Image (cartoon, rainbow, N blue to C red; front, side, top):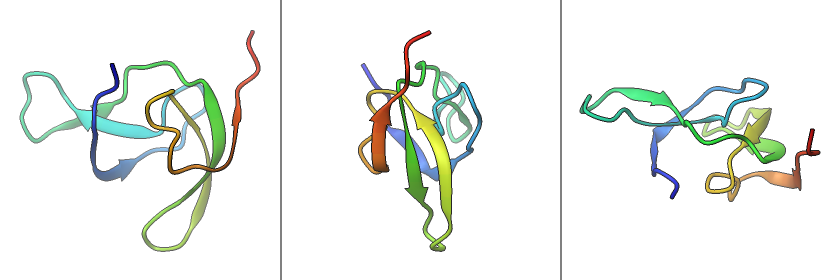
Length: 72
């Protein structure tokens, strides 16, 4: 099950889903999505900037040129 993302907060880091989610038990505080990334692609932020990101299966929907990550 994928947790809904927190506002439009994100962070492009290799090996982590780019989305932030609401932290369990900490109302109003974002935390990195705990799901492993399985997709990579380009994410267009609200200001128009584009970022290369990795995403879990539940958060890859808004990615442009999304492609599965190679399995290790």
